[in-house]
Every structure is written in structure tokens, then in C-alpha cells.
Image (cartoon, rainbow, N blue to C red; front, side, top):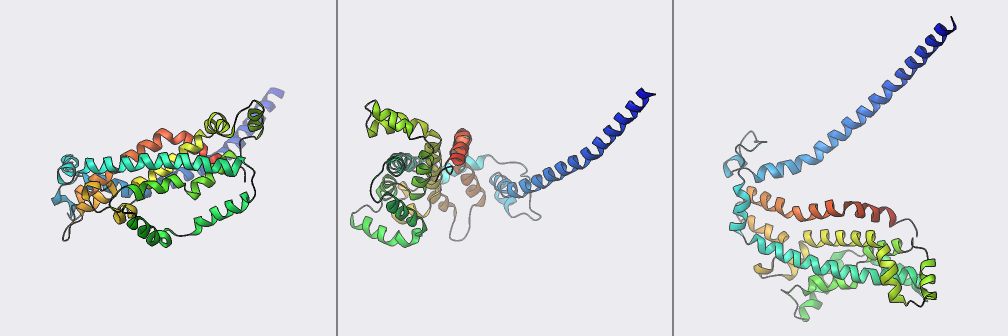
Length: 295
């Protein structure tokens, strides 16, 4: 009799558990359905770009629109290189990216180290001034910078697009400074007792511990420079020096636009940033998570 009561009690408990578990499963399924809808909405423009890149000129303006190219024309990607020197544009962008990443990493590390680890009069005031420059729009300094570089004779050269990187970006300096402040000062003191100088501490202690933040600086700089359109448009006049972002403008004609070639070129220009993000994803997310831990 007691065994039957125990079995009945267990069945009741299992039934209650199932009743509570079913709404939980439904809530989880509903959340996944909503997320899937958002994914479809955000991926639709990307899919349309890929589909347009694989269409012929006849299929571009067909009604109703052809969602699936039939047949897909992969020759459009090779046609891009025959229409414009796309490889040259990629090489020019890669050159600017290399020097900008190098300049931002060097300058940002040194300036952030001074704000985070050194104690000197007026440090907080200077840092507030640095943060204040974040609120100045780029359009305000655009004309004075152009006049300065024009008087130096640097128009139609890469110098106006490279040298500012060696002065540091206020936003990246702020991120690096916040990350460095999470490193215990005891490491600096121990290294000082052992006879290490400031540059040795920076090189052998701070920099190795700031690899996630340095990856963050590199990825941000790469993305900004690779996608920059306004800077090359203002300072470059020789088509042989154009970057990828400017090179895409060759497919915009006065009367018509080669949309299939434009989409093919745009798709190829997206490959380097995507590869960089996939390679640096783990360190990039770690740097983002730790950059704001300490003020």
C-alpha cells in the first residue's frame, strides 16, 4: 500500500514538473523564433547584394525581381578587375591600413601609458581636454587641416592620411588607458625595485598584458581606414592612388550604374574586414569587456 502511495506521489510530481517545463520550452522557442526573424531581416540586404553580384545585366531590372540568379554569373568578379585596376586600389588601401595601424598602436600605447601609470601635475586636466576633443565633429577641423596640408604641399600624397595616426586617436587612447588601469600597480613597483626603467616596464610588462586592447585598437583602425571615403576623396586626385572606397565610384556613371559590378566589387571589399574580425574575434571581445572595468 505504501509503495502504491509513493508511486502515485512521484507521478503527481512528474506531472507538475512537465506542466512547468512546457511553458518554459514554449518561451524559449518563442525567443528563438524572434531572433531568427531579426537575423533574416538583417541578412536580407546582404543576400540581395550577393544575388545582384551574380546576376546579368538583363536580370538586374527584371519584374518581378529575381531573388535567385539563374544562372549565377561568377564572371562578374573577374570583370571588375578588367573594368578598373581593383587590385591596385586594394594595395593602396592595404598600405594606408598598415601605416595607420602602426601609428595608432605606437602613439596610443605611449599616451595611454602616461595617463594611466604616471603621476604628474595637470594629468587629470589634460585627460579631460582629451575627452573634450571627442565632442568636436570632424567637419569642424576638416577645412583647417586641408589648408595646413595644402601649404605643406602634401595634397595628392598619402601623408595627410597617415601622419595623424601617429598622434593618436582620443577614443582609442581612452580605451587603452581604461584597460591599463586594470593592471595592478604592484607590477610597476616590483619592476622598479629590480631596476627597470619606464620604457622597460612598458615594453616587458604593460604591453604583453595589453594584447587584447592592442588588438582592439588594430581592428578599429583597420575598419576606419579601410572604409574611409571622405579622407581619400579630399586629399587624393591621382586615380592611381585611389583606395577601395574611392574605386567603387568608378562603377557609378553619369547616366547609368553597373550595379552587378558594383555589388561584386563591394562584396570583395568586405572580405578583408570579415577575415580580420573572425581571426581576432576572441581577443577583440575580451578587450571590449575589460576596457571599461576601471575608471
